[in-house]
Length: 455
Image (cartoon, rainbow, N blue to C red; front, top):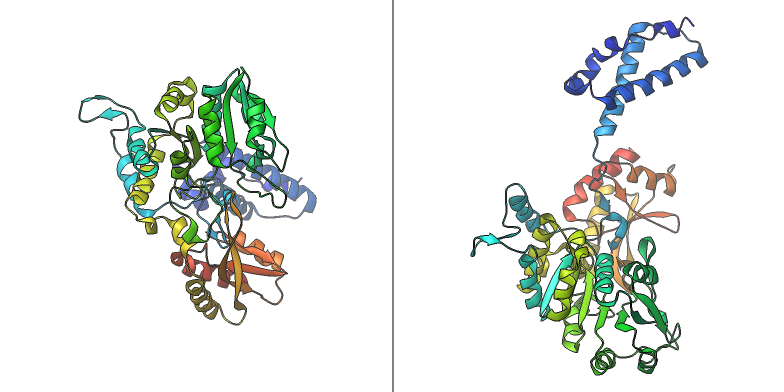
């Protein structure tokens, strides 16, 4: 009881110099909640230890704890990290890093007013998607295009517009599930359309689609398998046959391209990702794909194709609920124009994917030399990530860290909790830094982190 009497009045704690920087908002409810928790913890500790501490010492300790908790609560939750995993489009790490010049344009547009929905030539209200659809028309060769907040939303919107109340025919082998439980059958159910599956898991022929067509058929759906592949005894109708069937039976065709490419990925060593413009040229009525995967832009779902169908989709009330804001439009417009002008080097994802093994080896050897004997450069493989090109492995170089007395799990934890946090790979009992996904501008910060946590 004597120890508990030493707990100072709240006002004495709040007047402590250790809380001076927070005085402008010490009366806020979240500070009161922090103080209550710290006082409760202090009472429990004193009751258990029964040690005598002076009031002045206790005031200082409590104020210091409160200050620490306030700083932690005010620290941004979404933070920049160093991606040393070698996964270029790491879904959990924000997927595509955005171009610096796109962020400059974003800052200019977002810190003042903009012509988001204002036609400067006509002097009246305009449409927000005009800022990107013209570039999409030029890039893809399509008749019309709109943008929503991600590709799952795009698929939902297309199905709801073109097939609500009717059947959508899709191959059994294309009923995929990708990250965070995105399942084609469940999205279809939410859209109000009914699934009509055809073929088998590994083999579907064009005649399977044709036999399933009836008076309830509203749409023929083709889905890119994204992050899995079937090999061996498999069959899938060529895109041309799929399009021809839709035209012959007067049923619209829709292709979910998943990651989606607007430029040839072959030079990157990626051979199994469809090009959006190729599907448009083949005659697909509507396509959709992501903005923040191989495109290298912000999170978005791009819908493009025949004007007849895209305009129907635009008129759906769901479109307003799923549309993107000015921040997304600003960055997406910049990224699309970079492709249009052949400046893919401005897009970080493409720079990372194009980096040669020789270039990465040089960087890894240089960095290992700066770290010292506990770091060894070695050859490894990077992956694309983001549900793209699951069988593509990119030759890369990295650095293995091995510090005596620090286990690989402990070193990984320390790096993850450093500032900025570093996300690494653990392979064969070693902590690996893959230089394909480490920005050159982050190398100094990475070195400082390693020295701090192993010092």
